[in-house]
Length: 252
Ligand code: PXP
Image (cartoon, rainbow, N blue to C red):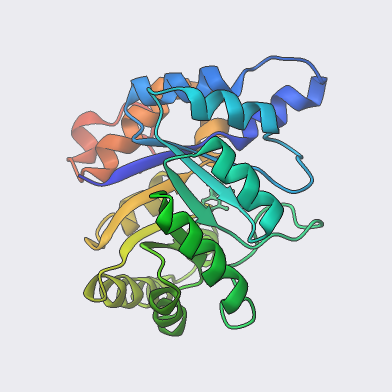
């Protein structure tokens, strides 16, 4: 069964727009799990533009929620992570001016720093992952670093699918990397920019065990509700016959 991680950063974005407490990311996290999400992802950015430290504290305390914390590779974040002890950590690149994570990590440049952090997290028994571009070389480096998982950046294929451009070469690249990672005993995840269409396309790559989807789920929930969108995505990822069950993603 392919797992679905629901990224709830943008629940916090909406909450922060008013500077008050509604909508509450913890409530969204609990509701997502009830609807069938396997885990909840939050990205505690250095500028705290959406998820705040208090959200991390509250969500990580809930025994009901498997939490995947995305964070940049630095000692300050490592300290926060160890204190809150999420189930999973995915190291991501971070630039202050970007709207969203623009690409995978530069593992060549940051090799030592990332290896140091991954080593500590592995010892703490937190599942480790690195957000990488679909590159065989990066998978080789992830193996040397000791990361248990990689999350393949799906931004390029997602844009191609949305713009109705030919996405076959990007799909092949992702598929080749997923196979290579699995052969090297690295669990493969994928995410970024995904929607129903990309979930359907990428779920055919059997080596990908988990997808992390955020912006589309929260946006689509405005129209159809969080429960319905998560349920549909879960069914879609299980490769069920889409016409038989799909109530909300009818355009597929
Ligand atoms: N995976 C990682 C590592 C990310 O940084 C993000 C964006 O925060 C996502 C998945 C989810 O991307 P999106 O919000 O576009 O679905």
